[in-house]
Length: 169
Image 1 (cartoon, rainbow, N blue to C red):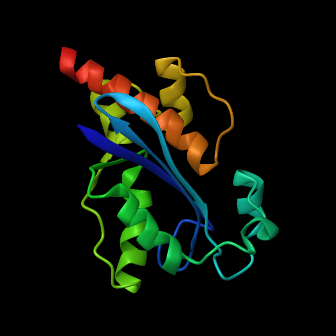
Image 2 (cartoon, helix red, strand yellow):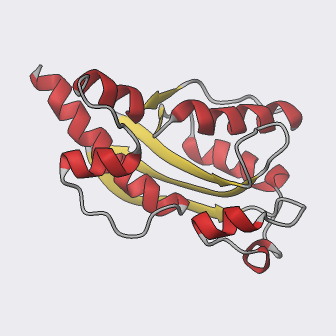
């Protein structure tokens, strides 16, 4: 089975008024993380709020020459090639993908498997299910965080562990 694990960095929380800054994704094929990676900056068309730069380190000059979402999203949708998607807090990321797909008159991908929901299912007594908590619980080595590809790599590792745990259940 093939999956695409993805993550977005955005200028805020609203898929209507905020924009995608970065898309990171990787493919899992037959339970193995491949070296096939999608990583693109996106020019949001307006200055990045200071508080967002403090979170993810993405600055205006880093995206100044990047293509707009009108170019990057079609590339991403072609790259995933219909594979099932996986994301941590998938509702958030899919909200941005779906809103931008509608604006650009593109067919959005189907729903994504959410590793937050998998964590809640597998660890119902735990209160926290953010990516840091999941990595700690699964003893995954955490390096850089809050950049799309770094978060994707952690999410992919968590997803594979969750799959193994569900197969044993």
